[in-house]
Image (cartoon, rainbow, N blue to C red; front, side, top):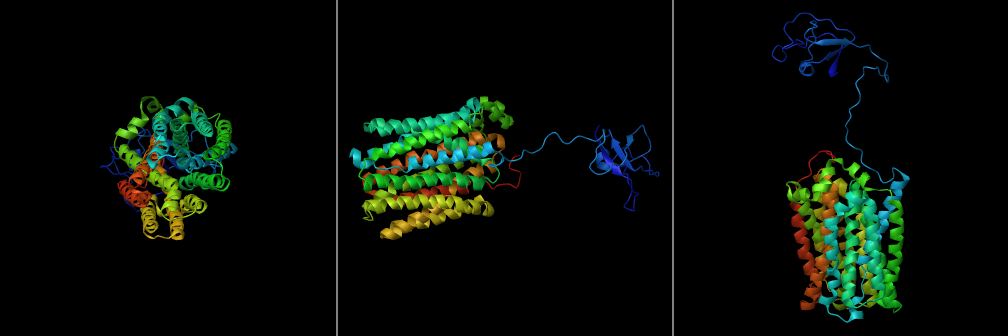
Length: 487
């Protein structure tokens, strides 16, 4: 029975209780008597007019006894069956803590992979040919963008937790045997597949948690931590210990084995049924094309494509700087091998600190406002790095540039969760992260081609132009409406 409880109190001169214009029930203005509580039921106009009359043939009246606070009678209405779901927290259970830490380790491995270097001198190749090793993961990222949603709906998060580390392991084992360069290029396709799947899967999962900005800042901070440690280890092995570049990949093999064991154990019970249950609105779209809706149906398509283009440029800036800054400092700033290697460490350390520190600032200012500020600061530092011909000034500038670049990826993922309905988050974030991750393949390759033609000094003008492009893409995003994130 549907109805409204009307308290027993007289009409204190506030006008008639009934309005003939508002309700056909209000036929007279005769005096009415109230019980302690009256339930007006079974009439479509009862809620809007709060009319109470004595004629029993026009409205069913049920007197209910007042109950002490906290007690329910058998006739008490049930609580609403539907409510907004509570956001998942990283520490709500021991299993969630373990899974969160496992994703942090995955991103650390990804960061170490993207910051590795040392191929040019070993293979005696030109900038353009060496840059193919950056380009080949594009095939893996493209495959990840297409397969991510299907893997989730078929195998659940367990599929990502096993397939991605296995892909890393294959790539690193092949690299360890220092094969002919074409084979190495093919091996990096597997590295791109692993990175793309983890980039998509773990960003989508963490991005839907409570305090998403802070948690994504920590997640990507571990990516930066891996990228910080990678040049330290690689520089020590290659420049100080005079070991060949491929010895570094013995370390990466060990990291990938740990990644496989830890992720497989933590996500073993994260099956497809769990994923579908958590995304009930998109159960049909898992088979019919949630990704298609995110990419080609407005207004979702606008958000998805603009964020994808933003991350394509952003990741390109990040990996191009991280991958080419050592060569830039050696060839243009005349630095030593070890000192130049440390500038890459400073850059990735700036990325890490920026993601953690600014990850707590961004949600307070708002992503729509804070990200353009970070981009402008990064462009100003790129100008210093380009125009001030001093090694130490360049080293400081590139570290600060990393600091302001740090929170951009997490901010973009959070914007997707705020602008799109929840049932499109996995499909859209998966595509955005994987498509954006392809910037790690395309744009460092473009820098290599330009460096071959014009010299590595073209790095900073290229970075400034690309930063302007991602600023335009970001400003094209709609404003975040003040609604619940889960609506």
